Amino acid sequence: MSRWKEPAPAKVNLALDILRRRPDGYHDLSMVMQSVSLCDTVIVEETPGGFALDTGGGFTPLAGRSMEQRTAEAFFSAIGRPMPGLRVTLEKRIPAYAGIGGGSADVAAFLRILRKVYCPSLSADALERIGLSIGSDVPFCVRGGTAYARGRGEILTPLPPLPDMCFVLCKPPFDIPTPTLFARADRLTLPRRPDIDGMTDAVRRGDFDAIAARLCNVFEDVLPPEFAEVFTVKERLLELGAKNAVMSGSGPTVCGMFRDADTAQAAADTLRERYPNTFTATPLPPLE
Ligand code: C5P
Image 1 (cartoon, rainbow, N blue to C red):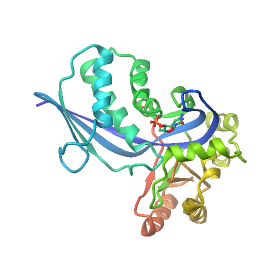
Image 2 (cartoon, helix red, strand yellow; image 1 turned 45 degrees about the vertical axis):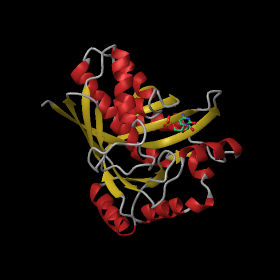
Image 3 (tube, rainbow, N blue to C red; image 1 turned 60 degrees about the horizontal axis):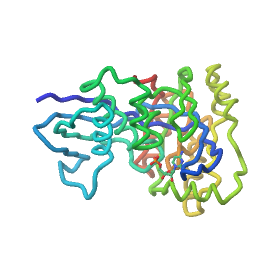
Image 4 (cartoon, protein in one colour; image 1 turned 90 degrees about the vertical axis):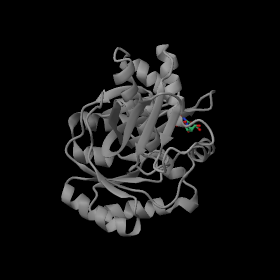
């Protein structure tokens, strides 16, 4: 039986601004995104018929159609071929609902496998458009690397790789619903906006200190008080040697930026005693 395997790297948002609410209910964003070495593994096997997904508990039926099943349906409809039988296994390491793109990364890796196996001539743009029909962060996760992202997150301008650095990703023990945060951002005045141009310049210059100084996510300023532990984690990361730290996406994972891997590892070991979902990670180059 044929079997294909692909890494599914998480993403972090080094800067995230909300520009406006759109008539379709989504928001236009302006972001600097980076794929990182913390990753899931996606395994795909062709089977005689049907669709099965194993997210860690075996191939148990789900209540509705999973994101992966919708992804396969969208892919085969786009290339105009009937869908074969597929078994998809997700080896999860990225925490879910954490703001670091765990679900999007799996969908993106699945799409890269489907293109490789069933339609190598499909353009990167077309693959990313299929990804966007599943989730706003999927196009970036299909591509990976370092990028300036606009629109829902799908209008991507590649940026050069970051200078050498190490991240510590630490997820406090709660989930934050993304739509709730967008709704609060619509209601409240955003007190701080990221300097996106300054950030893209800093990335283009490979300037570690300037990148660290511009980490900024507007969602931090609209967090409901019950999620204040995000700020405790940020402070701990700074005490433990991070040059700076920022919440990624709609949280709650905080990303600390370190110049050297040993300091990052020691910080992660300390934080993990209290927060089991703590990881070190390095920036990755583009995946396609
Ligand atoms: O696209 P995705 O399904 O990942 O988005 C989840 C939710 O986040 C959307 O239903 C929407 O409420 C919000 N969202 C948004 N604008 C974006 C991305 C996400 O309002 N650019």
